[in-house]
Length: 241
Length: 257
Ligand SMILES: Nc1ncnc2c1ncn2[C@@H]1O[C@H](COP(=O)(O)OP(=O)(O)O)[C@@H](O)[C@H]1O
Ligand SMILES: [Mg+2]
Image (cartoon, rainbow over all chains, first blue to last red; front, side):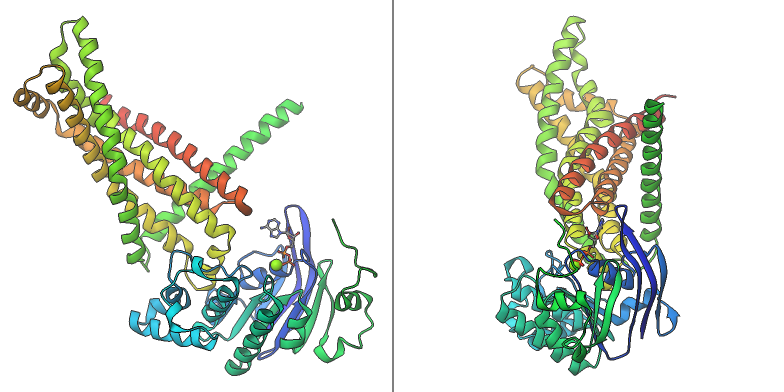
């Protein structure tokens, strides 16, 4: 279980997170929504330890997070963040290449690629030769390659056409169900919320503005959440220029 | 008062930057001696930095050696001392021009590409991705490059020195009427072991600087394409200046006794 309490983080002199409280249970699929620039990526980077928070606590199973946490997680980055100097299979099998031998890592990588609907012939291609949808899938395969206990998805559908977005949503739901992992997804895409969430948290103005089970978002009365779900320009959220 | 404050702020910023760089150097050294070691990345760096730099090193040294011979001859004639061409070409190339020119070429070719590559990795979150894959970026990116550059640069400098002397030899024997056999004899007799050692030590130090500065600026890149451009430019300038400064102090240490 991941427990976040009173998390603060300022960047470039601007407060981004201003007291985030959030608990994510084991095996739960939590989707964090919020406008772009709300601080969703910053929140995930603080949880992972890629950024050092200015204040607050983060505990994993009631203990402070250690370096070993990275051994148990997978992360799908917003832009894929694939290593362009390495072929696809070495990207996917990156973590495995340290322990297992090369042939074995390659076999596992190809199995993982198949799980996300990619054929073995792309294993030897380089990331620069792939389309946006394929990059997301390879990123997804890399995130699940080392059988993580927690997977983080940063805007898995952003920049994809609606059909490919649906495919990625289905893949995520499927791997989360198959592997029984805890999933933390950040998105501003409502279709992802419907497809993969158990629990929804809305980040706004540096705090969790609303949190609840997915079933409750339809009946929620919070004006911020309602405006976000409806995508209307009319409401308390001001678009900032 | 505002002028004083501005000067104070600049000095403080400079000290802070120096502190960050010092920590980076110490961090790199501490990672060199701790496992794991990424052999494949090290091998790639050796080829990138060493092998692929040979053409530019060779050409630079060849033309410089040739020009050096012409100038020494022209200057020497005024004192009826044109016979010293082989000796001065040898000492000039081996002690100063070989290491400095190869160092600056490596700063242009290797520092820039290291800085641009790592900065691009930084701004596209590949460095973060490494961390989430339980891989330390200092070990995976910095150590192989710094180690490869430090080890391979003495070889590049030796090649540069040799080709530079060859350039002087070609010009002297083809254009200035020197005797081929005695030119070589004079060169060999005149050079001391200390000259060669100083050349190789300079090479190692310059290689260390070139790769380390490239990694430092790359890792510190700001976001976006502007960040990559700024990191690359800063790295090449800083590496060049540091190489020239280090050259002065090494010359001082080796020859000013
Ligand atoms: N490395 C950084 N340096 C300075 N500001 C940053 C950095 N990363 C993010 N920010 C700022 O923090 C805010 C939140 O960013 P982010 O978490 O990426 O938003 P999003 O919710 O769209 O993922 C933005 O205003 C962004 O400009
Ligand atoms: Mg984001």
